Image (cartoon, rainbow, N blue to C red):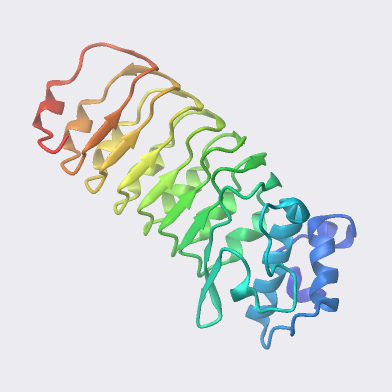
Length: 253
């Protein structure tokens, strides 16, 4: 069992009985839930248990089913297809603590919404490994650090919502590689630097919300190439220069 869990967690974390990984390892081997019938299901159950312990599951507003005798697909705000977790969405549920890196190993995840909680720490770079992810919502938490460049690898992502945190640093140019992105919300953070010209490559983008940051420099003329754009919000920054005439070509704005 331990060798299997080592594929997603470090040995130090597993050996620490007080860590989320140590607690989850014990739970997997002693839980009332019928053990997974294959390695993938055991890993899935373990990762969800790590998530529960890492985010203060005992204090959640609603933790119906979690770590009980029901299958993990019946736990509150967990959805599955064919027994495989596709949606994890315990938003507005009094989650505290940090997002464990193990979540990045739920490799069939399509929808991850952890918004409206009290999560702290950084955004794990491992979330960039969720290559089926269509929506990532971490808005209205207390997350710090930079936006991982690895999020630019989520080529199926349609919505990225990171607003109302304490994120710092620049907007990664790699986000311009998200060809399917329709919604990008980074408002109310502490982001600095220029608006990347690469965002002009997001031709599917409908909403671009960057207000209430510390962004500087000029508004890129390349934003005039966002032919699907309906909502552009750049207010309450430190932008300089004029309003690009190219924005006048956005007939859906």
